[in-house]
Length: 319
Image 1 (tube, one colour):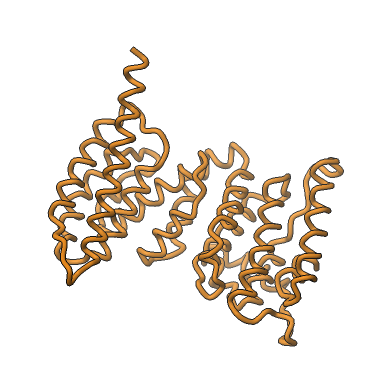
Image 2 (cartoon, rainbow, N blue to C red):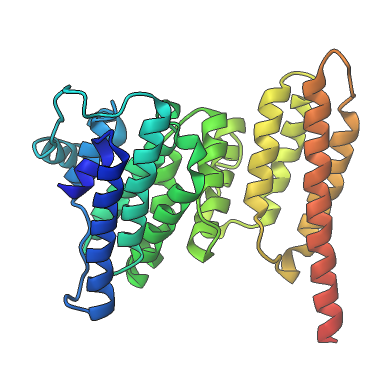
């Protein structure tokens, strides 16, 4: 009930008070270890929050969880239109911030969700994060904290056997290349998040160009990205907007973690070829988007060059 009040009440004193009460209750469970598993809101309660913001259960959960959708729907509480639900984007954003804060804290303790419930929550939060009607784009950190907590909560054995399946699940959430770029960047950059992030971007490239679909994402390497360089070259005179998304996918697929020594030459080749492609993008006063995309490619190449220098210094230090 407290979570529901936090989500829909327009009085900030009420929402802040409920938020404080829930966190105090959770902290007592965490520090005094009263229970082997700490409290976390049931999935229907979480769905109730977002349904009262205007979302539909069928859009928050994929077709593959049709049984779950029907089961969850029967437990959703709809707040009557009595003026309690906050009006306007800023009010909803404040309430959503508090809700995500509670969910994130719950996930980083000892949640009692099953693996399937964790996946359902992962899908729900990804959909909500892309919904601009909730001003959710101003809360990326809060969503990242929740997603990091979900990935951390998977058992080691479940993660090892289902991580690639999770990647394909995330791939199906949206089909627009701009939304896909946002979703990939939303994933946390810890070990599990980075694993999904890089392979998700790789799947997006496969789908965008219909190339490389035979490659198992489990065996993904930077070398797998070389096949898309020709496709990027073809986009230069035809579709700068799509080219910008493809460059973002390429950047995410390489990742922000240390490059393995064995992949240094592959990244060097990728960097050299992208520099050549950027040289083919001509600056134009009439088309400022071209200059923006060219600058984007230069920045990505500069970042990769720094990574390559780091790998080189490590090799020297080992000798």
